[in-house]
Structure formats: C-alpha cells, structure tokens
Image (cartoon, rainbow, N blue to C red; front, side, top):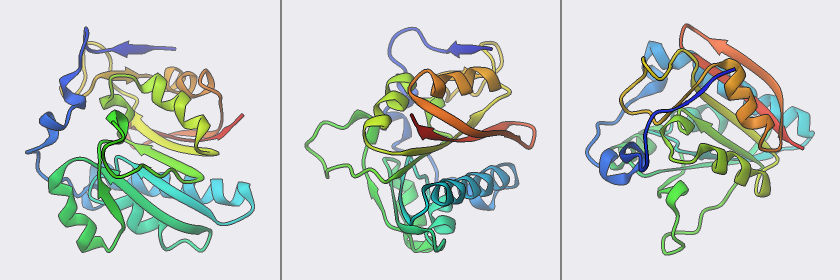
Length: 202
C-alpha cells in the first residue's frame, strides 16, 4: 500500500491561478480518458441502483462536462450538475448541454455561489491535484451518501504528472476512502493508468 505527497507545503497546482489559462480538455473524446469516464458513469448508475431511488449527482471538478453529459440522461439520476474553476471549460458546458458553475469547490470562502452537494458526489481526476484530499474525502461524508472517484494508479514520487500533488497505488487509494468513513463497493483499474471506485458512506 502506497501514498506519496508530492509537495512540501503549499501546492500551486491546486490554485485558480495555475488553471486560469489552461486549455479546455475534452476528455470524453480523448482515447486516454474516455474509458475511465464511462466507467465512472457506470459507477454512478450502480450507486443509484444501490440506493433504490433516483439520485442527485454533483460533479466536483467537472472539467468540460463530459461525465455530466452521460449521467444526466440516466433515468436513475434525478438531477446532475457540476463545478469547475477553469474558465476554458465553460464553453464545453454549453456545447454539451450540461448544468455547471464556475467555482472553486475545495477552497470555498462563502462569498461565492453556495455549493450544493448531491446524494452522489463525483471527483474524477481531482483528488490528486488537491492540497488536502484526505480532508475532502472525509468532509464529503457529511453531505453525500455515495462517492465516485478516479485518479491515476501508475504514478509514484519519482514518476508522476507535474500537475499532481498526490499519488496512490491501488491499495493506497482504497485506504484513502476506507479511512475517511467510506465503504468501497467496487474498485477497478481502467486501461493502463486509471483507477475508478465507488463507495457508500458508512
């Protein structure tokens, strides 16, 4: 089991300033990301079926809305919306016909639009960018019944994306959730890079 913190004090890659001028990434159309987004969508559906009724879904760090464009059409999803602070992603929300808002969910000060959390919260390719993923995963137990998440599983402290603040192997990622009050229901590797899981609040 392994987890690596890839920064000393403050991680600049988690800030709005770092992402402000980054280009939109249409992950749903990119072969390297498409499969993990579809697996995440499958896990959203699994959580809804486990719950037994239509669930609301909040995508925290929704990018250009690729995942939302899939799950918003599920009959088991009552409502789906997202948040992201990268300005270039707004164009994707309009093109995909999804509801999303520009907001820094993980550094919320209370001065912006109030953050609303769904019965299911989604963090795909988000936790590895944050200063405190442990606090975020634990904090979501207070507002959501289910989580769907994905991050790379092939990174280490010596080989990782320069935009990432944390890295986990499969066991380390599962422990991140289990130690924070979640019961992992399914956890799989997708392609040669990503791990995707869904969990129920204990």
